[in-house]
Every structure is written in structure tokens, then in C-alpha cells.
Image (cartoon, rainbow, N blue to C red; front, side, top):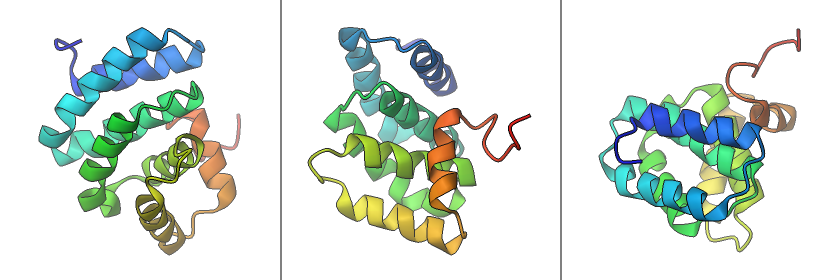
Length: 139
């Protein structure tokens, strides 16, 4: 896993989520790798890769607290530069995965930014379909 690029890890997570891959041991190794990388991710990588990874784990309903913490810490300073899809994907992911409300403040900040952008609950729900189809008419 250490040889994957950040984009490669995020894309792999997305593909595994699309297949409903339920090997928790492997996904935990992926999450641990994401935790290790989060602090040093450049802004561009953070805004693209972290929402995709978080959304993937949410689609699999796999809660990894350390990964959620690392993503929240790294995302907070750059929330304003996330794409609409990335922002909605994080809102949706933390709604699904934050079972114990550890990230209420982060979720509130994400929702505040989504509100500033006039993003709807439907937009948030649609984000789980992926960035390539987000905002499309379904064609």
C-alpha cells in the first residue's frame, strides 16, 4: 500500500466500495495508510483524495475512527477549496460513519460551507454515487 499514490489509494477504495468489498482487515490497513499520509498531503491531493476515500468507507459502512480524525484534521483548513462533490461527499460520509458524534463540530462546519454554496440535502445524498456522476442528470 505504501507504493500507491494518494490518488491510487483513493481510486482503489472507490473501486472496492463499488464491489461491496467487505474484507475489514484489508480496509483497516488502507485506513492506517491514509492516517499516515494525511498530515503531509498537499492541498490538491487532500481536496480530491480524502472525500473519495471517506465516501468509499461510508459506502462500505466501515467506521475507522483514526482515519476519520485524520481526514477531519487535514480537511478543515481547506474546506473552502473542496469541490461541491467533495464537500457533499464528506458531509454524507460523516453522517454515515460518525456513530458516536465525535465529529459534530467538523460536520457542522461542513454543513455551514454546504449551506453557503446552496447545496441541498439531495446533493449530499447524490454524492455517494461518485464525483463522475455527481450533478449529472442521470443520463
